[in-house]
Length: 199
Image (cartoon, rainbow, N blue to C red; front, side, top):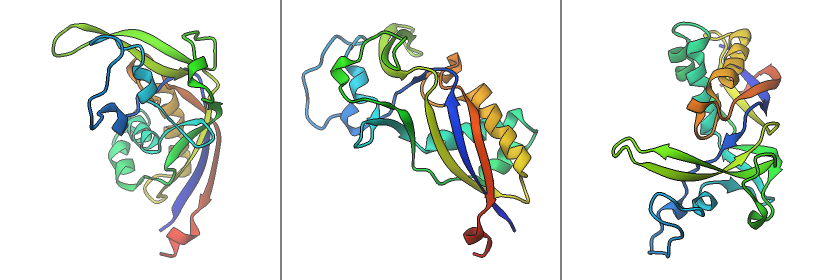
């Protein structure tokens, strides 16, 4: 039984919208709100995460689900196989070239590397429209991750295809149905994970 490991680097071909849930989104104590219901210009401040150095990141689970969703575009039946064997060993997808050093300097200018995206969103239950403010990062963002899988079920070529299709058709982050968060694979290096093989 061979357990393959792939170290993958990806580059964004479309902007990412951040909408990470955090405890601050539902505070324990009541706080004064800015804006009005359905239109809070400050909401974006609670929906992104950074490292101690200020680098933006999202949970590693984002890429895990992204790859599983992409498998259906590669081969019939591959999605269930991948869901059974795929392990994402990266806890955080850190965007190595995107940092927030002073949030007060972020503008709504989409030509900047980091900006505030503003768009109307239709609520499913009420059909009302709300204004959503999301932190965004423009094309060219970079991140990397590592994955493990059972080589007897999925060969290296198939897994590479899954990664390509994940970038083309699925993406990561918020508002993926409108094409946000798409990427291309810049590097895909496969090795046999000896520790898993001998376990």
